[in-house]
Image 1 (tube, rainbow, N blue to C red):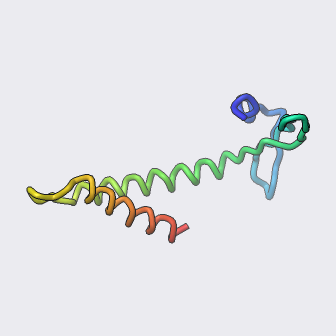
Image 2 (tube, rainbow, N blue to C red; image 1 turned 60 degrees about the vertical axis):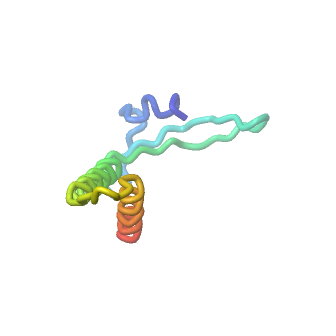
Length: 95
């Protein structure tokens, strides 16, 4: 797939869908002895939106972790793991 994605944003693969630019590149992929034809799809707007969501969530997690104060006898790994699990659940519910 990496080879197919290398030049996906070349203008020759540019299309519009619902007035938004995106890229669709025809590919051929071999699975064993079967040749499969399809497309590699790239939506720059979707990529930017997902990146912003990820970075915002990452920032929020970092801020929350910065507020955590460990006791002398606390297991830092367990505290981090629990915090990460709770944040992940919150993130997934919000999707």
